[in-house]
Amino acid sequence: MEYAIAVIDIGMTNKKVAVYDQNLKQLDAAYKNFDPVLIPHPASDKKESLEVHDLAGMREWLFATLKDFAKKYPIKVISVTTHGATFVCLDSAGRECVPCIFYTYEPGPEFQKEFYATVGSAGQLQEELFTPPFSSMINPAKGIFFLQKYFPDSFQHTHCILNYPQYWGYVLTGNRGVEPTYISNHSYLWNHREEAYSQVTEKLGIKQLLPENYKNTYEALGTLTPQVAQELGLPESTIVTMGIHDSNASLLPYLAKDSHGDFILNSTGTWCVSMHPQKELGLHPEDVGKIVYFTQTALRTPVKIAIFLGGMEFDTYITLYKEITGTTDFPSYNPDVFRSVLQEKDTFLLPEVVPGSGQYTTSKPGILEKGKFYPLDDIKSGKHVPELFRNPEKLLAVLDISLVIQTITALQRAGITEGTNIFTEGGFRKNKGYNQLLASILNNHSVQLTNMEEATAFGAAMTGIMAYTGKTHKDLADTINIQYTDVEKDDFPGFHTYQAAWIKAATR
Image (cartoon, rainbow, N blue to C red):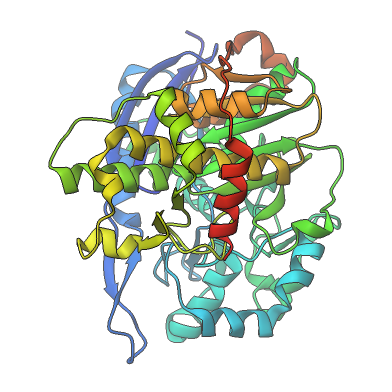
């Protein structure tokens, strides 16, 4: 083996370090879950806690794991990928000076109004910056505004604001930078057309706090500091990449193969992300106000995206079912039950488990059963439980049908046209009902499952090779083996009528 690439892959809960060889074969991996650290809300009238990231605990584990792998493999490059919407504020000494808040916190409607009053209207910003108005703090500019508002004493010590991948790159190299995939990803901080920081950064007074060092995703941020090299047992010459947003990392292998023309990658997990590579930027008028946006690939080309929390929704209801029934059994797929649900049209599972996060932002989460609505919070508390939970096959059908309707909406908003191929990767590949229904409804499209495992880490490893060798993504195509499996189609009469009733209920 000539060299190995270590990938730091930081998800919201699960953190991973994986090792790949120069042929993109995964050699090893280690995993650890980190619970959020809870701190009091600094506002005196708030009787709640805030979830923050355990940066110190993560650093300790990441360094220990890298040190162990350095004894086993000739690591010459470290690549970093992380989940989105997260940043770290550093003081003049390079230390974290403000808590690193979870983006899932919802600061409330008054905060949202105050934010848009400060930086501009949501619709105008979406048209100008191709960023949608998420709830919570999924727009990083909102997270910065939140810290300015509620942690003013700490925030005034901020000397530099780093996006999450670049923070970890800074920890390793001491260098600060910014790259396309993260800064352009629904942040409100980036102007796609001008390839520069947006006016929002000026209105928040933070432009001078953002790095000037803007480089390609697949370039090197730098090499290890002497102290870090000693801690890890790696040479100081070890390269560290600029870092990459996780969804963009999973897209990179498909861009490298690029043998299927127009495609949408239906990446399924906690977030279901429909990613449609485009030649030009451009939103339709009906996109404004929806969770539709553009980001950039690792190649600085535009991608139109629509997302929803499909995996979280699926896990929420399956976990509830098991808690309510006291069983560990998983419901099985029965196409006849799906057809029955579609024909009866009297039971609907409505989004959104995190309000304002997906394609039906005004929907109230819960189950509408025979005209009676059961809010998700009531189901969770046991206050009211619908009859649906006594029928596991029907519950699975109602859940999968909801996910398919949301997926079709996301695909449409991502720009699906005649001839667009759909590639599904991630957790939903194992959900036969979801896949068969989706493929059957999209009967004029090729809907295929891919065999990409841990695509995020794989794509990040690609950027590591590119940074270390100077190769392009196309040069790596021969080392990427993506297999495509056609999804069997079936007949599901009544879907479109059910879909119309579902949409009416979700938007009521």
